[in-house]
Structures are given as C-alpha cells and as structure tokens.
Amino acid sequence: MAVTNPAGFWRRLLANLLDAIVIGIPISIIGYLITGSAEENWFTNLVELLYALIVPAVWYGYTVGKRMIGIRIAKVNGGKVGIGTMFLRLFVGGLVYVITLGIGLIVSAIMVAAREDKRSIHDFIAGTYVTTEKPTV
Image 1 (cartoon, rainbow, N blue to C red):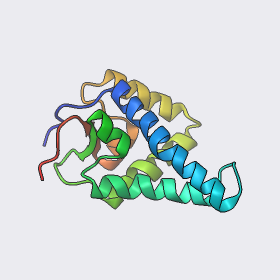
Image 2: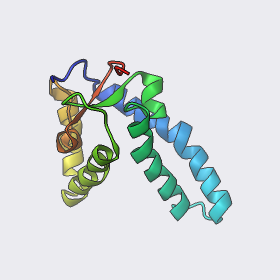
Image 3: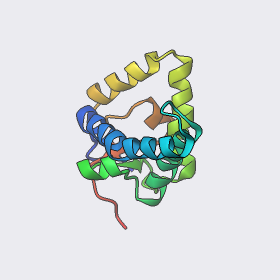
Image 4: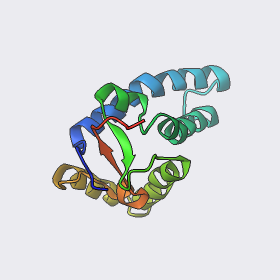
C-alpha cells in the first residue's frame, strides 16, 4: 500500500503542541497534586508514556492533538497501528535521536519538510506515516 495524503511538518508540529497543552498540562498538574513535585516526576512520565503508546493504538492512530488537526498515524502496509508499532516509533526512534545527540531529530524534521511522503526516521523504523485520511473502520 502506498503513502497517501501525508501530513506535513507544520500540521504535525501543531498537533504535538496541542497534545502538550490539552493533555500535558493537566497531567502535569495532576502529577504535582499526587507527588508534590513540580519537576518531572514518575506519575507524569508514566501517564504521558501510556498516553503516547495506548491512545493511538486504540483510537485509529489519533491522539487528541492529531484528532483536533485532522491527522493520524497509519501503517504504510495498511494495517492498524498497535502497541508494538507505537513502541518502535517512540522508544526505538527516540533512542536513535538520543544516540545521535539530537542530530537525528533535526534530520527527521528536514525529512518531513522535504520528502514527498513526509516520513521521518521514526516513521521508517515503525513502518508508519502521518496522514490526513480518515481510517476505514
């Protein structure tokens, strides 16, 4: 299956910013109330991790921010993204970015901006892309 209607850099960035505002801030406030720490804490990290892994897997590739913008994560082969796919996107992709000291992240941003299919390094690792197409349920 081919990559169709890929979402570009600005839409993806806006969706991530909306996730940070709509999901991240409330989780941080709840984390502060539970742990008493305004800094990063175990609760905030755990809930944000579970959100990033589980929500796209059960909600057809959407997160709250992506849904607001009208984009979602899809597998290139046409299958539904699952926990394993999201693990590859988040952890293995993130590991590449850490090992390359952030250079991989910059390369990924350039790839999304310049490539016709708008796929980044973590998309290639997980076999995914971000699209504007609605899921076939």
